[in-house]
Amino acid sequence: MHINQGRKFRYFSIRKTKTRAPPNVADEKKVLSLQQLSKRVEKLALNLNTNAMLEIKNLHASVEGKEILKGVNLTIGDGEVHVLMGPNGSGKSTLSHVLVGNPKYTVTEGSIIFNGKDLLELSPEDRSHEGIFMSFQAPIEIPGVSMTNFLRAAVNAKRKYFGEEPIAAGDFLKMLKEKRKLVGLDAHFMSRGVNEGFSGGERKRNEIFQMAVLEPKFSILDETDSGLDVDALRIVAEGFNLLRTPQTSAMVITHYQRMLDYLKPDFVHVLVNGQIVKEGDASLGYAIEEKGFDWIKEELK
Ligand code: ADP
Ligand code: MG
Image (cartoon, rainbow, N blue to C red; front, top):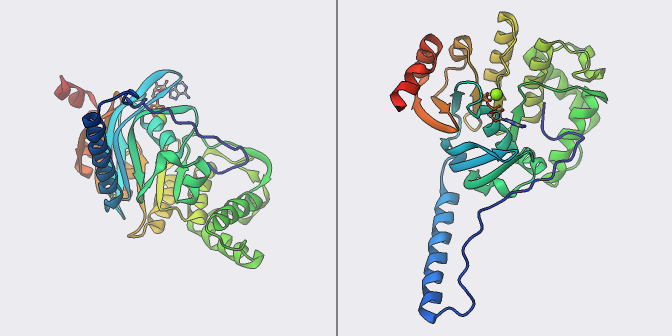
């Protein structure tokens, strides 16, 4: 399910309070703090000049007062597919929610730069307009809002953000038809409420369909493959592959070897207890599929 829907999120970020110099500080100290300030500006400029699409640095985040992410570092370049694996409860979904700005999750430290912008300063809606898309682990129903109307609203909200006119009805319907075919979704789904009465497989296919319509720069697939039979998984993975371009990237959370076969990820990262503890290429994913996570935990001891 796309984040930019009916409900309006407001984003709150709690930052570490920066130590301020007391008002009666000596002149030398003022000079020092100016130097510190210029260092900070330099650092920020370096961050903004990076070629990476997404740069996550020392990210700490908590939910309901409990720290879940404990210093995540992750860089994703243009056109790359990264797979994120990890035991249940390690924080994979938390990282996804933090990236889209779900207000339940509080960032307490660290930074996220997306295409040169400070992501943590953007509202969830603006993150979506800037090109971040997330497919939820459990897509929800929005009864009473038809797929067509939902997607038209999303497409037009994005166009408005970039100062463009709403899409012409004919063009929109033509586009929907094209994209539906990518994931083999029947026309009759378009007049139904969003996910209303959709089977598990149809919901997951619908997620990729929405991705196709919204053309995000960066997609997060959080176990979009779970609960799918072999055919549905192939349709979802092939649909996803058709949407790949040299300018788009993705973070895919999965446990399945079959998904690795289809996606051929550039990198695999392993999240354990809120930190990325191991990184490699697709072979790391296959090793985990075969041996689980215990050997990685052992290495950490
Ligand atoms: P994963 O996706 O790797 O299985 P999660 O990010 O879903 O892990 O969860 C990490 C930890 O954060 C778990 O202990 C989970 O119970 C907790 N958690 C995640 N989301 C919430 C939430 N909305 N409310 C309370 N606890 C949460
Ligand atoms: Mg999860």
